[in-house]
Length: 94
Image (cartoon, rainbow, N blue to C red):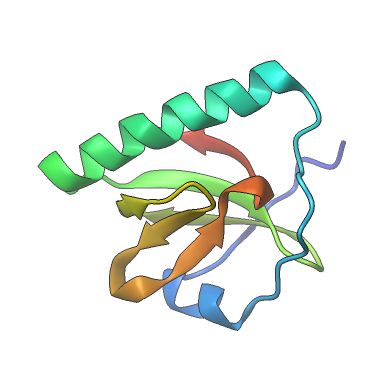
């Protein structure tokens, strides 16, 4: 697997297009991602702690260093209403 992720600013994410396809195929990795998203939400709301989110749009793999402000069943919500579909996230670094 190509592990090269291009750094992107949070504000540029809203211009990206995301396919409706899960990037993780392993159930354990999906569970780990969900657990880490919940931790990131707590850290973001309580301490405004930034994390690295590694994700994939329709053209390439990217990484953003940001604070998680909200979480739905399908999306991660960043500041200013910027969202990333959860199914497009490879991993998080807390």
